[in-house]
Image (tube, rainbow, N blue to C red; front, side, top):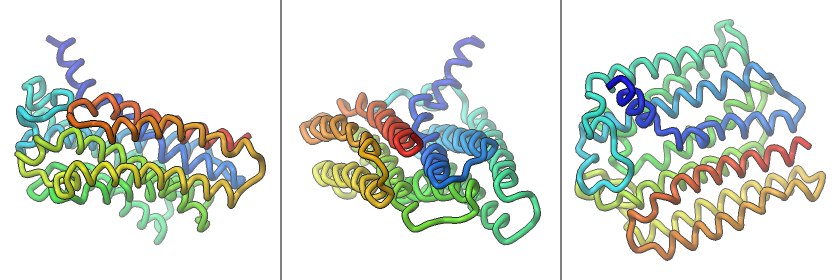
Length: 302
């Protein structure tokens, strides 16, 4: 029984989403190193904090969708642990509280490693940002008015998994922000939003039945495909523009080899007529996003 419980908790954290969670910290750190700044302590704590935030989001999503009825027989993705009975609502709620506390503690240590522990306007701003990130992770599908149920999930993913994650990490390394940084930050935000959009395209039928009005439910699966293409192509364009503005060597454009994968991915999405068949693409898109960040990062480091 203990072994089955252990497996259920591992499943609840959704390991296949975790590489995507690291991407914002990696992107911010890569660009900081390129600009001549880097702190190993900031880097490690940033990875740890984003890990806790992603796990928190996954656990809260498992809890919230079960409570609000989005986990229904029409749902296509992997079975949720609360819905299946592997983990009780009370156990999941406790896990959400513990993970939120760990994310906050890690975040406070991250802020301290970057700008010190002296109380200041900047310190309070980062603390407020961290608390907002924790609240956003929980309130996506949990609470009385989850914003993921009214089409705002995409916006929050773009802000927290893209802009906030990349720019915040960069600032903690460098203590400043430059205008060009918004390009890689937006690129990661767009790719992270594409992962969410793909998830919502897969679950469109069950979401519509449960009253979960994602952007896909609002705009329809046909328009969601064009929106998906815009997200992916916009991300590659933003990275290409940053590279042009910071050009030193042709090998900096090596990340564009990933365009071959993204083109194939978009072809699958546009041909798709059965949402359930999009499920394998979720892991591939998340890993492709992670790979793009790694290739882009190493190309500007070396």
